[in-house]
Image (cartoon, rainbow over all chains, first blue to last red; front, side, top):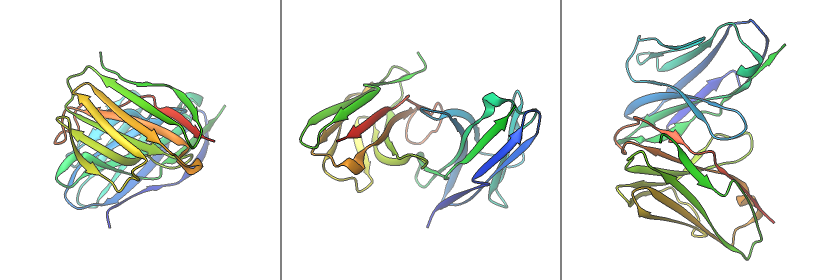
Length: 112
Length: 114
């Protein structure tokens, strides 16, 4: 059965800390891996990863994919209270990248 | 325009009501999706439309009926729902089914069934 597993499920840190969120997957015919940030409403897109070993960066956030070991990490440096959210990992699989299977998310809480 | 617009933002309906959720995008995307998200759970795929044709129905009950009148619009018709159908309903679109390029979610409709 296809699955996406995120860890930890929840995390509490203080402002300025660096965090690493994990996403491992077992899917048939992997196509791509996406990271989303979800606050109160819809998930907002962070990164899409298709190739191993190539780091994607956006400000304090970065992510990398390891297709051999079947996982991805999302790093957030110098965390701020505005980073508090649920971070979702989703994998596009099968005959179409449009099919996404989501992990359960990591709830990040950043304390002042 | 790089948005997916969903209306209404909130909806309360009785179990005998008929209502519709609407989703619109003007990015030229040819794939559109409906997801259901319960509290503290990840989104679950309900329907996929590709070039205005339904291509996946993930065993969703018939009280949910999707419709894609044209390439920019996606509706979800609701009839005889149950309280357990209360959830956040998310619409998304992408360039097409074979590309996640531009995969974008709408802000969702928060549905409460009473």
